[in-house]
Image (cartoon, rainbow, N blue to C red; front, side, top):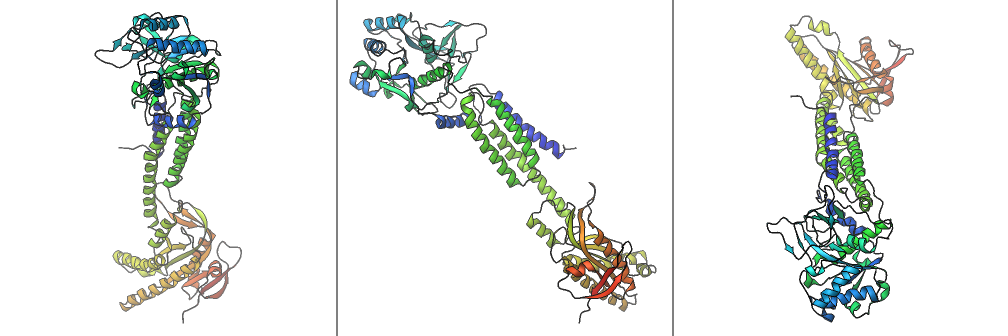
Length: 607
């Protein structure tokens, strides 16, 4: 079975990361949340929330103190009517919305006054729709208002309701105060319109806008065919909250109510009208409607944040990161790639924080999930590739280089040490003098054994002195120092190896002579200089070698050794670099292919 190429695999991984972002941005249902998107949005909302006072609306709170001062709940309808009349008459409120339902008859006079206010004044009563799928849906009171649904309405469908008693059916404006919490119980969106039995019913904040703020700006334009995310762009401390008792006793300052829209509700714990919101785990329901009303006013006045294409920004960001990862993964270490992806995630968090108020539908975490996928899949994938490449590198190097050199290369973590590069090296070329005469009288097996034993005399000193074995040349070898690991004393190491080679061959020759065989002599040429060292092989076979003028000169010196009684002939480049060896000057010689004579040296004999 043929597996896809590495490039194809990297492209597929990048494509999956991009697909994750696209799916997260466009596929989930509007109220669904994946990959901690809402959790991150909630944190952004809390960071963004402004404490600048909201001067266009006021919340009248039937709080614990009001209940203690005026009387326990439920209040008589006469008292509720007095509260509304005081807000509209004495305090000149622009319009009032009640965040409460009256499903049962109260005192006749109070109900009559409430009905008159709701029928003729800027008052919005409430009814609560239920959206749960229950075998026996809740249906209490009477549904009022609404407009016929046109075409294929996609507003959320209600299954039940809690409405007001029939005495309040003639109201002009009525709003829905029903909530649809997210899966975690948090209220983040409101159904701006609710579909029930073929009619559409507005939420409380929209009903109050339709009732009393039609002249504000160009008019709000909510997403009437679905849920609308509540911006929650103001901290709860930014809203003016007035106790209901201070309205009834007229001790509240008129400046906080005159000309404003008013939402009347209750924060009293005993009335259980509390929900969880991004700003607070236990929030009075009336403040949710106040936040929705504030957002609608911002839209109507042109003060809402300009819409940005957040989903497209997230997708483009992920595409850029995926392509960046495709480029950096094979070029940088795993740690560096992890650091880059973490940095990209931090950058995205900053971008998402800025984008969040401008796009209510984009997923704040989609690019983070793509980055996490790259961290979990792409980085380990390329790490495995680098490990496999390292093993291949080790296999190649161990064919030429001493184990100590390989270990040092791994310790230094050089980037691709086999890539051809210009280095200062010392080349040693050695072979057996008179090889043909040595083997012509031997059997094939004897000739092979002689060659192996002789090459063993040459190879061990090279590797012991941390040399790189380039190649065997039949009865000899080519080795060099200074590549792939650059070293300062490469000339001295090559001379050390040459001395050990000569000594090893002398011992081997002495053993052979005792057996009545011909003596052996090794010829060695050594030269130092700049050479191009690296892997010059093909895709099917690696060949690590060095090429350059100094290598050619070493070959000429090895051939020239037959004209001297010395086993080792050293070039000028090595003589200039040697620090630990004493050399004897032999004179000059014009080598083949050279325009000028070359100075020749040999090692001073040991005492």
